[in-house]
Length: 364
Image 1: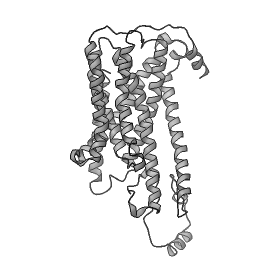
Image 2: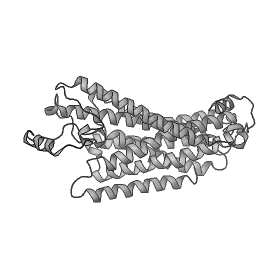
Image 3: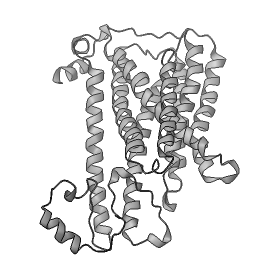
């Protein structure tokens, strides 16, 4: 690690200090700012709008497709559109030193993944403590469930427990990863169910912010690359329009599923707006420095590679843990007589999104 830092601080420039910008298609480059702005806005805002306003509300199956298609897009983005270019950037021969001796892109992504897991562990521990303190009935609960789940009891203890067992009630404290389905109805305020709703809300909030952070990292460098692209500009332009729209659908669908409280009613709109503006702003900046920005220089390669690696680790965690494991394995939405059919449909839609996004990696 120390050698990596030493090589990072080396000031010598051994990589190309120019770019592939050829001065052609300036009108198309300017149009990319607005076309990608519209595509990103549609992807990010449409799920939110359709979930709030009845006049544009679509059938539930449309939202179902958008949600799981977007999950596949995000997972594929981590593997194909982040980790692979990060590996290329940090593996360039011109960087020399430890960069060509160790796969730093994968190492940084791994550290990023564990860092996100650690942050979530600490955050959920804090949420548990906060909810316990706010709870009016004095009960306590844990994301990891009761120890009774893991300890085997003697038969005599079990018989005694059965005799003294009170009237069965629905467990008001499901584990965090079961994502309870209760809503914040007025009749549950001040009850244990309210604690469950708070826990679910805080968990969803953390997941969405992690997801947004990783996607914005990637979007900024994508815009810069498009602005200074050479012969591959046209194909990159077309691919990025679909890329941004699909990625926006995945993010917007996740934002729309959160039951935002009144005091944070503007937060989903700000999150969607941040995604919408990031790539167009990056393209504008890239056009402004199109003759001087060297994407193949030492600083650009290291910066791009490190940021893409960090974003890849973030999206690995968000995609596999939050979007796949939580939604499919620990969610209650696939329970019932049609559960298996619905989960298979969701899985196929997710595979379609991942497959199309992976295919786009051929050009971008």
